[in-house]
Image 1 (tube, rainbow, N blue to C red):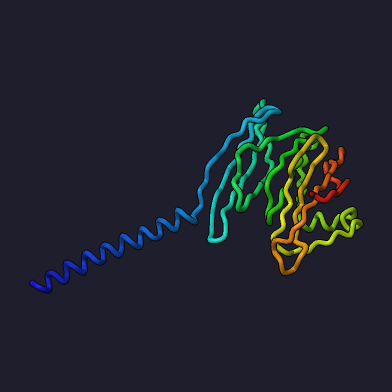
Image 2: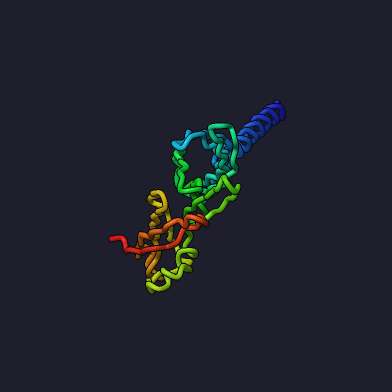
Length: 209
């Protein structure tokens, strides 16, 4: 009689253990697994932007990996490439705009930065420009200012705060002290898009007060 009770008790314990293990892996997958979905965004220039989104997370942060396809009003499709957001919410409001012969998209990039994707439909030509810490600090105008900054120290970020036809405004925040992580400065950098190449050229730098 006792042996039957022991076997029954062991069986119940085993079932509970299996349920707990399955539940643990289910919660782990929900917390850190991937999720895929599609967002269609109507565009002010006409057509729609189809965004194939993959979201994921780990112990440090969460991520949006977005593949963009522009579907023009006539049905033609343009592969624009990818954007990436880390640790911030993607607002699902991305808008294309036109400058001269270029169709331009502002999106997120790796390591706390932004980028623009440029497409010339006349030449079927696509380009990207990343506003990273390294691209900023390697620019000749930045170097000429002799600004004190600590490259490769975190936190640092560089985000597009405004686009207006040929003008792109970027806010670049960086460390100025090796020991104090909260000792930061920010610069507002103005870029002008080259009409022919589409490449942004740094034109001015002003400290943010």
